[in-house]
Picture 1 (cartoon, helix red, strand yellow):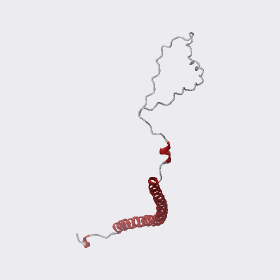
Picture 2 (spheres, one colour):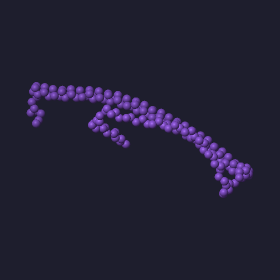
Picture 3 (cartoon, rainbow, N blue to C red):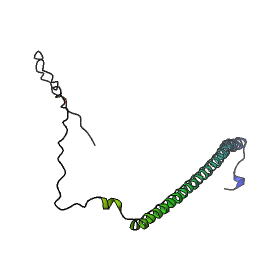
Picture 4 (cartoon, rainbow, N blue to C red):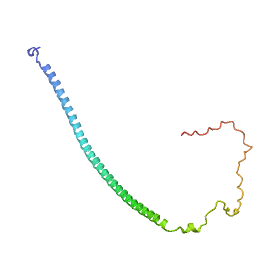
Length: 164
């Protein structure tokens, strides 16, 4: 088909113009919707960036607090370790001093006490002291069945199951 064979009469041109105008109008509406969506996305991105910065600041603050707490705990541990190391050294020094003094001084208590023999007499028998006797406990209360009540033929409930 060549161009001279197409007839350009008025109704055909109006139809083509209306189709092109409709497509242009649809594309303009689509552009407006895309611009509105783009604006919303930019606002959402700005909010997200602010939220990320806030969270990053909070994370840094928590990390600093954690490092401060860790440092404080380490200092306390070092202080306790130094204190108990000092106490251990003092205790060992006292033990060494006692060990050095023990052989040089005679044991006075050991010399005064008689040495036990293989056939020594048992210690004197001491009778136990009497203990006051307590009254017997009161009898347990047992409820009596009421003879006026008749036997019930209903089924007794099952005990609860325990699931562990």
